[in-house]
Amino acid sequence: MEALDVAKKINLKIIELDKLKESLEGLAIEKANAAANYEKKLAMVTLRLSQGDSAISLIDKLSRGECADEKMAMDLAESRYKNQLKIIDLTEAQLNGYQSINRFLAEA
Image (cartoon, rainbow, N blue to C red; front, top):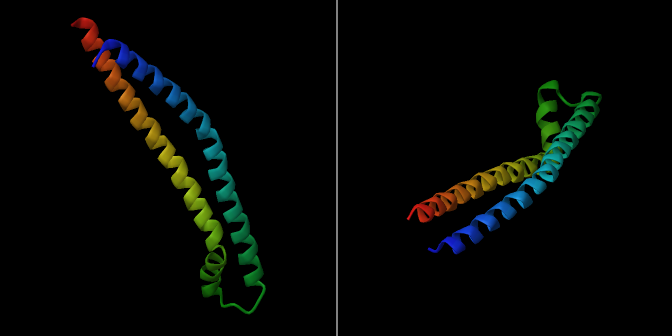
């Protein structure tokens, strides 16, 4: 591996990290919105069921069942956010590797 190739790869990783960091805020907002939507719907469904004929012991399960789509959206948003953090960590590790190679080549 030549020094110029390593320098290009370092630059590409820095650009990639900048893009990944920019997308992280949007994913955090998506995660928070999904959690809020789930909690709102769960509260509304629980209230509606508690005013009806449903047994108290079943209200929680019935409420969660009716909110399954919102729960899935919340879990998916959380997974996307966590995956993005992992991708950032992996990209940083790759960058560190290229920087180590660059130091080795500079000393040689």
